[in-house]
Image (cartoon, rainbow, N blue to C red; front, side):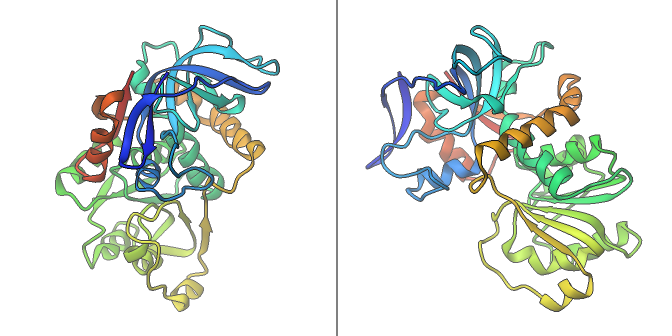
Length: 323
């Protein structure tokens, strides 16, 4: 089968051996694969959890048809249209753990649309609802909201009854688009006074929850923009892995600061995250209330160009490879 592999000179599309599913795995004939920021880390030669290094097939999510299932798999069968988070999805076939595989809703959802959802749904339901403990009527700020997972976070917050959803983007055009995907207010995280906008919008109290994909330069303003006894969930580090942190403000506001990642989670933990997500918001996915715009599609042979487009940070929504 063809796959986009990290070679000595960058990303190469070449023939590799087709994988075989184990007892608790599903083999998917990939029709579309979504791009994620973590793919850029692997493409640069760095490790992302256990994944990385020469010979690595890139990719973290896909949609397609079930070709084969392991002996323990009962909820899908060959021929089913599915979406899933999985490793090595920039390929014609991919292996997924059975607990991550979801049937594509029977509402004319395309493979390209389905491939935009698995990583974002599991990541942001966990960040907003489980780790973030968002309750109906609360306010939330999504830092880095114009990315695919950021837009999903806005929509998950709305689906769970958030009273006020604020999204951030450093691009004025994208800030306007945030309002089409769940944001009541859009801010510029590079504005040195953005936290004042948040305080004004929340009657001086600050938001109940921040889901932070930026970190780095926004850390101290996040503290100022969070209410007393609020929560900050650290999901990503687009603005830097290190930065100044005002420990006194953190203590004064008694903020819960929570880190999340999938890199140190067990198979069982990820299965539970997906189970909770399906039980809670799958009806909104089926109804089309939670969905993402596709910025551009690229054929598998142009995987390197697709990654370059993501690295340029000029996209809004998801970039998708099609097979």
